[in-house]
Image (tube, rainbow, N blue to C red; front, side):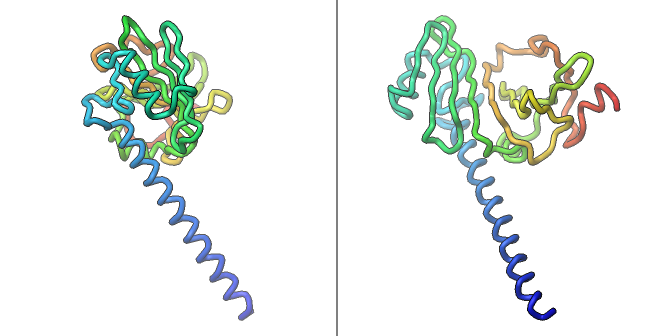
Length: 205
């Protein structure tokens, strides 16, 4: 029996170290996200200094080429796409263009930003968007004052509620003055009220 105690102690220490390591990675990811969204101290928020509704497509292209390299940039008439395979936070992104101005920013994240991380950077969301008409197809977050949508569910395995440990898969940034509640289709808007099963509130059991 005495031989078991040192082994249990080792397991406990390893478990504690793993928890500490996970917390450190989470806080580092949140800090990096904050740096990306608040670069150049832009208000409302932007991505790497690229602000929907204000930044020209030419300026956005120059910023992306400087950061990721011209070989990772793809330009079409109304879109600028980029990949960031060497970046440990994001995977790729797209910018929709209208009249030579960036209108929306789509950022595909690696699974390192949790919902808890996102709220630590942005504060509480305005709404939870529950997708679906006859059944729940997932829940997403809308930070209305910042013009940011956070897609947190894989469509193949939609979750039923909002939890701290879910990962943010996609961020969509839109000019704040160009969006309103009428632009949300096929979704039920529920005011944020903490972590809970929002699908159940809409569709019941």
